[in-house]
Amino acid sequence: MTQRFATPTAGEALAAALSAEYAAIYAYGPIGVRLTGAARDAARQAEAAHRRRRDALVVQLSTAGGTVPADRAGYALPFPVTDRASALRLAVEVEERTAAHWRAALAATTGADRDLALAALVDYAVRSTRWRRTAGVAPLTVPFPGRPA
Image (cartoon, rainbow, N blue to C red; front, top):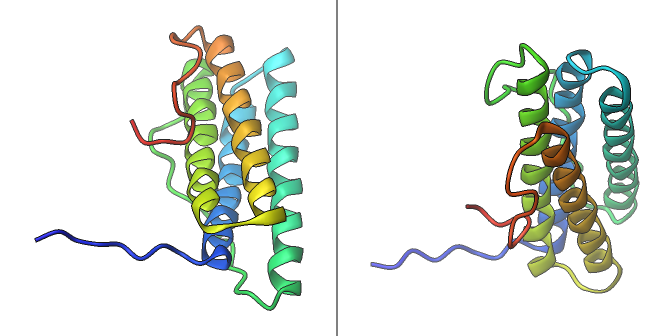
């Protein structure tokens, strides 16, 4: 028997992307404290980018009368962040996971919402590549950003 999944509405897809933005912002706390110099600056810039996108989504969803998911007090990290290497690994994963939510939003959106989703996907794909380069991880790029491996 084949299981079919319903395609989310644009509002649901954007709400899921907003939840991913919340989690990304949370993750940059433990990431930033384990980095120094240019890498710490990059983490601050990444967190600020996620905050800007979060804020824009909250306004957009609430003005459109959509559901704005609540932020949680905390999020479970996929592994302990204890040093520079694990912080960089988490930074790559955060950008890839967030990109995956925006990639999913592409299928459910049109017009300006689709442009927003594409811009976010590209932004996070580029940022994950930069984190891979900083971490010395190969390959630097993935064939289809935001797609599960």
